[in-house]
Image 1 (tube, rainbow, N blue to C red):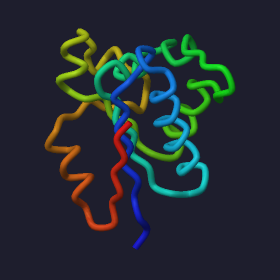
Image 2 (cartoon, one colour; image 1 turned 45 degrees about the vertical axis):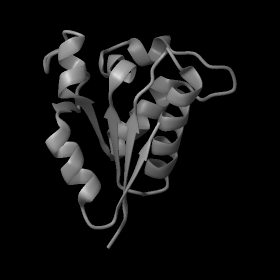
Image 3 (tube, rainbow, N blue to C red; image 1 turned 180 degrees about the vertical axis):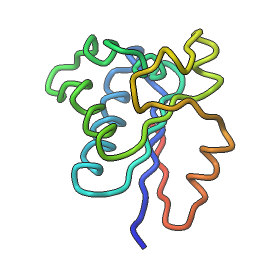
Image 4 (cartoon, rainbow, N blue to C red; image 1 turned 135 degrees about the vertical axis):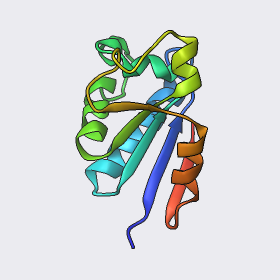
Length: 120
């Protein structure tokens, strides 16, 4: 059975290094063929919106939009239901391929056999 990597990003532009680490680890795993599920929570929820990842800059870090593209192409990306609601983000607002789901789905993914969860 292949292991699945579930990465929860809790930071956005408010903590750029932590944010970039979450996206970099998720994209690197996805590019290596690991099944990846990236969760956007807290301030990282903004990156579910079109154009937001392109605005993010961090010296010596790959462009966030490219990392997000890799993850969307090979894995799943989920925006937290409550986090999205607090920011008035609805299902029709997010990039194609991004879903909005809540804690029950996160718990299901992280408790699945072979799952490894990382929180940034």
